[in-house]
Length: 181
Image (cartoon, rainbow, N blue to C red; front, side, top):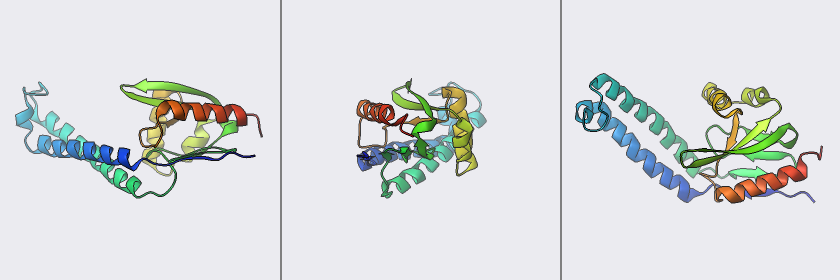
């Protein structure tokens, strides 16, 4: 019998991320408009243009994050599907869709600050980078490849599931399905 595990997106987590992103977006606007208020007080940088640049970068980054978060809030698709074909990832803006069991050669964990990532090592990373639907997604995946050694990572930050349970489920299904085809 084929097991299909669907893990939904957590609307509560998305709302919390949207609130945090909105606060940081507003802070970016404030920094861009009045960079001199941040000299010495926070950044210890004398150049207002550098501070203004970081404010604008925050506006762009968190603005895109807010747009993405709003679209995820109304997304009806499961965040993650685990079945006999592989792992179908819909958890983040850099998600690529189906990661086939036969392509996976290792699953490992990396922690960046307080966030844990489940890194999926694949035999042919270029296959998945080429599936990127946009140039930005492709660049993000190449950066992941450089930093993490793989373009594919999954987090539970937007899922109705904690990281330990997510890891356990994926490892169990990987062991069950890795040689099935």
